[in-house]
Length: 200
Ligand code: ZN
Image (tube, rainbow, N blue to C red; front, side, top):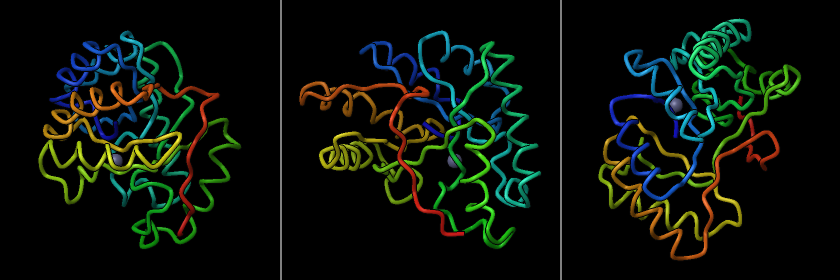
């Protein structure tokens, strides 16, 4: 789950607890009032990963120094909330984003090298719920995730806990997955990672 925590994160945590499903949150500081949800998610057994502090493409992708300055800000928030330093990150827009090209040509290619060199791992997704695109209601989000998960041995599902209808799709996704032999797992340092190809 990307872009939170936000107003719907508490609801999501309660749904996940109902099924004892643990997930990975790629957190931001876009909704500072909900920073405490980072600690809450950590205490409930979910993985806290970093998605940047500001999520502002024009500032984070201005240059590598700007990216890491921003990353260090969200790292400090995570450390304050959980007592541990996250090691997994997801680039806003994914590694394959081309928006960054207008701010800094080549930055994604550079980051795919410097991120591991700085001790982090980055992870993209192979199943897009489209909750930030064409999917505007819970049933469409659930259908997109279920059809995507059917194609992979290891599915990395992209959803946003900042979208109410995406949170509302989670129960159907979990019930379908559990009924069809899937296991839901949070990422850790030893997890497989999926990488998009850098296009900038
Ligand atoms: Zn994002």
